[in-house]
Length: 301
Image (cartoon, rainbow, N blue to C red; front, side):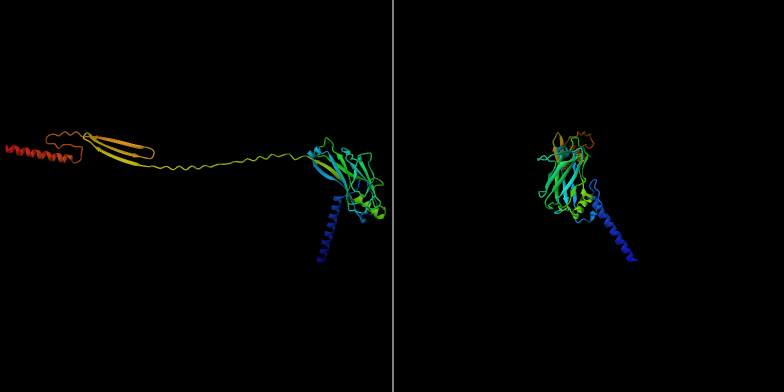
């Protein structure tokens, strides 16, 4: 039971891996437009890929640099090919720019020679090479320039497509069975078309930075209170003056009090009145003494 479960699990993993592999291949390359074959191209020992430039640029860049370069590149076939004949279509809104030699494209591999490099009468190029040996290399094979339209806008996409026509080539000098299988694979499964995609420039954002500075000032007030008390006592025949001075650090308050000498009226036989405590007793005693002396003197007389 366990063995069967293990086998089922391994089989499922194998199927999943195969599916992922196939998906990965189809995401990388596809078939040239219009190409069909009955050859078993998957049996080819050489599996070349023909790729065209993919680029995404901002609208501002497209406006500033309307001339854009497209490259046709080869991978997986170094030293295995020389005769080639490839048609490349470009978007009809684009204008093909001629190079300094007056040709529509430039061969990038010096080991090969140009057999033909022409426009095909429509919005396409026909690019061919040849050599005495299989001198083709991996890397850039052809480059050509196109000019974007003046009214280009964000969201525009300009495609470049490898289109197969009868007698197109990607083979070896011998053009034998191995070369035919390599060519079949290149056009059936090795094509990776390209494009120029225009995107809108991001909307500029403004960032405002506000800096708030808070200053805290602490004031400490120290209040010193000074209390001064001054007492002045003056005695005079006309009266008595008492001065009391009290104050704080802010002001001094002076209070003056004047006491007049009391007026005393003494009736005969009465004790004298005084404004001084104890004075009445002394005066009364004096009156008795005077009365006694007067009585003694009268008796002697």
